[in-house]
Length: 147
Image (tube, rainbow, N blue to C red):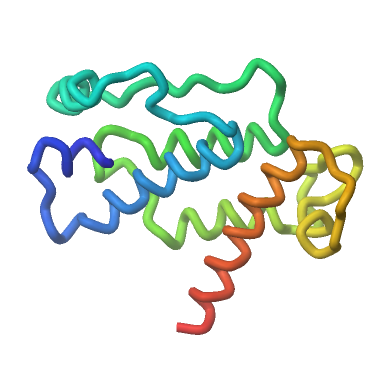
C-alpha cells in the first residue's frame, strides 16, 4: 500500500500513482520471490510512511534476470512522493523494453520475448519467475491496447 494511502493523505487526482506504487511491489514480489515487507510489522510500515519513507527492498543474493531493468522500474514506482513516480504510460514503456526483441537484456542467451512466446517445460525457477512477470506484463499491455 502506498504511503499516502496508509497515512490517509491521498489526493484522488493522484490515485493512479498509488496504483503505480503497488505495481512496483508486485513486480518485486514476482521477480525476487520474496515479500517486499518481510520482517516488518504493520506499525513499522505505517511509521515509515508517516516519515515519508519506504522500507528498503531485500533483493535476493543470487542475481535475478533483467535485474537492472527491474530495479530501475521498481525503484521509480516505490518513490515516497507520488509526484516522483512514473505514470502508467512510462511504466508501459519500461515493460515494453523488457519485451523488445532488440533489447540487450537476455537470460542465458534468450530474449525475454522468446521465453514468454514458447512453451518451456524444463526451465529453472529463476526463469519461471521472470516468465511470470513478463506474462503479467504482456497481459497488461494486451488489455490496455484493447481499451
